Image (cartoon, rainbow, N blue to C red; front, side, top):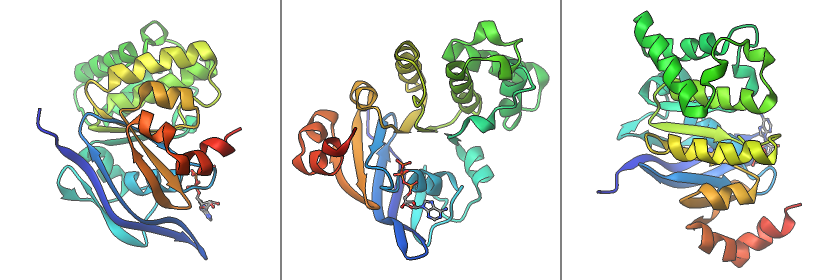
Length: 240
Ligand SMILES: Nc1ncnc2c1ncn2[C@@H]1O[C@H](COP(=O)(O)OP(=O)(O)OP(=O)(O)O)[C@@H](O)[C@H]1O
């Protein structure tokens, strides 16, 4: 299959006062990848994906998605183009059922009730929450709420699913299940994930980008990144 570029940034920059959180980043993501972004605390990972999703505006540079310049598009327009960003559990409506939460997400792209219900069901099945569809989202365990968040992203039928620290706070069993879910998701969407758990990164990622002080320090296949002395020094060696 020919390699297709899904997303590309050129010179992407974001400053906060005197601090350059993302510093002239040139980044390319191919369709079908599971790309992990790693780096020490404060490296600029969240700011970088915020720039991709439109949650944060850049000071300089461009973002191309699917061949289109989206640099100035607001977040909701990017969602419609196929960028789903699940970054915090507060996206979930705790008083609503799992089914209703998923329907809210599906409604942004579908109009007919039957289609919305089918999309909600399909997204629940993809993360293994189909038995919980009638339950209140707020009654789910923390791990299940994180899966619901992923399912809400999937209900948007994204081309790109961005996951910001998805395994944070999950138990080992939940992480195992999460790996299965992401592999399944990756059959239909490109996945970009910020992840601190190196076991998860090594198990999932087809390629890794290492950010340090707002710049790309290294990029490549997991084995090469794990062996890279500069990466070990900047990140792995300092990891707790
Ligand atoms: N809204 C903001 N206002 C001021 N400074 C910010 C803001 N957001 C991020 N920063 C700063 O920008 C730098 C990059 O932060 P960012 O959250 O992107 O890093 P990160 O790699 O995601 O870190 P972590 O792994 O700790 O989540 C940090 O020094 C942070 O303090």
